Structures are given as C-alpha cells and as structure tokens.
Length: 227
Image 1 (cartoon, one colour):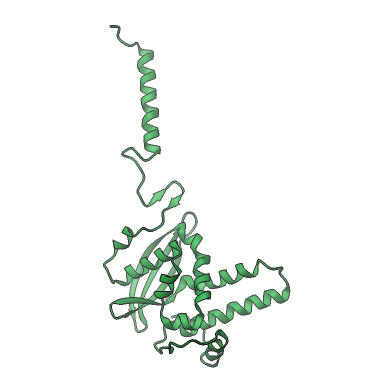
Image 2 (image 1 turned 90 degrees about the vertical axis):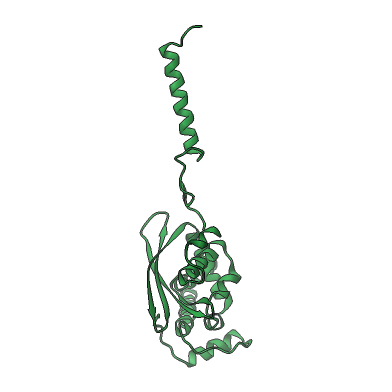
C-alpha cells in the first residue's frame, strides 16, 4: 500500500476546508448565527420571545404589542389600546396606521431603554433598531386595568397615522387642493388622538357615526400635547 504524496494531502486539506466553510454558511456548523439575526437582518418576534419579560408586566405588554404589529394582528392591536383611543380615533385609522408601520417594524428590533411611573401611567422609553441606519427613539404610555396593561399613548401610532393617510392619498393625482385636504385630515385625526390619549374620562360604549365623534371631540379641548 502506497502512502499519499504531498500533492494528494494538499488536495484533501483544501476540500476539507471548503466543506467546513459550506457547513458554517448553511448554519449547520458550530459557528451558526444566533436565532435572532440572519444575514438579511432581524427575524420576526416569536411566541417564545414573549417570555423574555415577566408575565403581566408593562415590558411584556410592549413586546407583545410589537409582536402584533410585526405579524399584522389587527384585532389584538385594537384590543390592546385604551377604549377611549379606539372610540375617538376610529378602528380603520388605527389599523391603517399600524399596517403602514408593519414593513419597517418587521425589519427592526426593539430595545427598551427606560421605565418611569407617572400620574398618567407607566412610561416606557424604547428604541427601534432598523437593519441599517440610526436607532429611532420612541415611547409608550401604559395603564393597568385589572391584571392587564393597556396602551393609552403609542408614539409609533403617531407616525403611522400620517404615513397611512399620505400613502392612501398618493394613489390619486396630486393637486394643491388634494394636498391641503390630506394635510387637514392628518391634523384632524392626530388632534383626536392627542386629545383623548391618556385621559381618564371613559367614553360611553355606544355606536355613533364618525362625524358625530369628530364633532364631539372638536367641541372639547383642541390641545395636541402628547402625554
């Protein structure tokens, strides 16, 4: 039996290196990437990820909220908001706002940066970390009702509402009048959102037209300060 020559050994080593590199690239080797990140960016949150924070904590409620945005769960998003906000702003506007945010949120990660108890509720500050570019700081105000936390103000929705309205308007030919109409609609919906967000006065649960809800809100405070 003849012993392999140097050329044969060199060829064998090269092929072994190629095979090892292929295993690592496919994620089968010991150097596979973390389950949270792929070569194309962050993965969507999973049900298992929701166990990161203690059950029924404000942090867990925020993480669950981001989970519902990423997966497009409109019913759960609406259910997690203060009924005051839902009744005043309207379910279609809320759903459209979060739908507008879904693509960018699906390619981003959440990092909670702070927590503070206030007279209006518990404020959580956080950053949205996109696949590339600077982090986007934001906040959410939550209030505990029974054993659950509800969101009374979400900074993300404050961006999603204008974005969705602009996107819908862009489908039609743009004129000076249409631009003005779009801007007024954005201001109107945001005014409704800001005026009711964080208030403790409960809106009666009755079916009313959108026009009557907007007229009722317009007769009250017109302040647009955020909590």
